[in-house]
Image 1: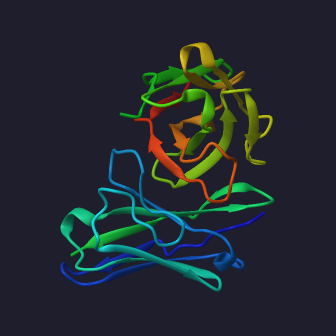
Image 2: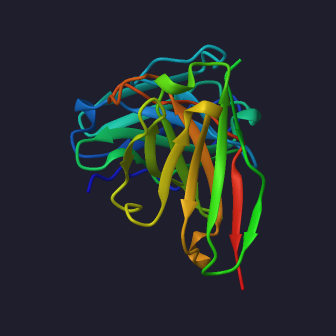
Length: 107
Length: 123
C-alpha cells in the first residue's frame, strides 16, 4: 500500500520560515494536498494541487512537490499557525492517503 | 454556505451497533462525493471511504472494507457511517468531508468538513 511519511514534529521561531515535508514514492508525479488541524477543530485545507491556496488562506502558506517530496512552507510563521499539518495524495492502490501528520510548534 | 452537520457524540458498549450521520447543505448534495475520516485519540487522520450520494456508489479503504458500512439518503441530504458490532478500538472522532469535485479524481480534495462525531466504545 502507498505511504506518505512526515516528520512527527517541527519547531520554528515566530517570524521565521517553517518547512514541513511529506515523502512518498514518486509523489512528485501525483498531486499533494495539505490540511491544517488545530486542537479540537476539524481539518482545513491550506494547499491544494501542490501549490494552490484556497481563498482565505494567508499568502505565507505555500507548497511545492517534486521527486519524492512535497513541502509545505510557512513564511513569517505566526503563533496562530501552531497546529498539526497533514499531507494527502491519491494512489491507485489505496485511493486517498494521508500522511501521519506533523505537529508544528511556534516558540 | 456549504455546511456539513454531523450527529452528536455516542457512548456505546462493545458488540453494539451504531449509525452516525452527516447532513449536507448549501450545495448540490447528490453531485459531490462525501468521505469519512477516522481520528483515533491523539493520532492522525485515516481515510475510511467515500460515497457518491447521487447513486450511492461507494469506495472503501482496504483497511476499513468489511468493518464499516457507508450509505446515503439523498432525499434528506444525509450520509451515514455504521457499525454492526463495535469494538473498543473503534473509539475515535469521525469526520465527514466533502470532495471538491464531483469526479472521483486525483485532483479532488476535501474542501469542507463536518464538526466531527466522537464515538466512545467502553464496557
